[in-house]
Figure 1 (cartoon, rainbow over the protein chains, first blue to last red):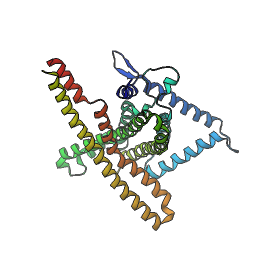
Figure 2: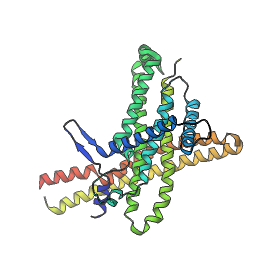
Figure 3: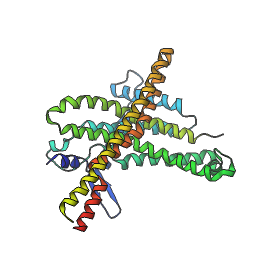
Figure 4: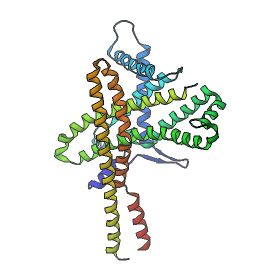
Length: 246
Length: 100
C-alpha cells in the first residue's frame, strides 16, 4: 500500500447505499453514541445532584452550565426557554465529536479490522451542514414567531433601503441568510477536516511521528475548543438577531 | 491518440492544479497572518490600557479569531480536495479512456 492509497483509504467513509439515499454510517453511529453518552451522563448528574459538597462529575457539569449561561446571558437579548439547552448541547456535543480526532489514525487496524471508518463525525460535511441548516430553520422559525408572518415579510422587503427598492432588499437578505448556515457549517468542517488530514500525513512519517505529532496534537486541542465555542456563540448571536423586534 | 500525448495532457493539468493549490494556501496563510497580527496587537494594547477588562476581551478575541480562520480553512479544504481527489483529472482520464 503506497502513500496515496493509504491517505485515500483513511478519507473514505463507511457508506450504506439504500434506494432512498446514501448514508455515512460511521458519522451517524459515532455521533449518536456520543450524543447519548453526553445527554445520558448529564441527566444522571442532574438527577443525583446534591446541595452539599458536589462530586467531581457534578462539579464539572456545574462549571459547564455556568460557562454556557454567562455566554447566553451576555449575548442573547430575548426570552426563550430553548436557547440555554441548545447552546449547551451544541458546545458539549461538537466538542466531544471533535475530540474523537485524538484517537490514533489506525485505531481500527489495532483491532484487526481494515474497514474504512472515519472516527471523527465533524469531518463529514453532511453533519456540520446538517447542524447549521437546523440552526437556519430555527432562525426563520423564531423570526416568524416573534415578528409575525406579516412583520417578517415586511422586514424582508423594506430593510435596509426603502420599500420602493424591494428587489434589492430581498436579494441582499437572501444572500445574508444563506451565508449564515453555509459559513457556520463549513467553518467547523474545514477546520476539523484539515486537522485530521494533517494527522494522517504525520502518520506516514515513521520516525518523525512523535516529533511532529505532539505539537500538532497540542495545537489541535486549542483549535477544537475554539471551533466548538464559536459554533455555540454564533448560534446564540444569530438566534438573538432573529428575536429582535422594534 | 498516443500514450505520450495523453501523459502530456495529464501532466499539464497536474501542473495547473499545483499552482492553484499554491495560490489557495499561500494567500490564505498570508492574509490570516496579517489579520491575527492586527487582532492580537489591539488586544494587547487594550489589555495594557485596562487590565480589568482582559478576560472579556480575551473571549471576544477568540471569537474573532475563529471568524478570521473560516475562509482560509475553506480554501485549505478545497486545496486538499484538489490534491487528493482532483475532479478535473478524473474527468480528463475518463475522456482519455473514451478516446483510446
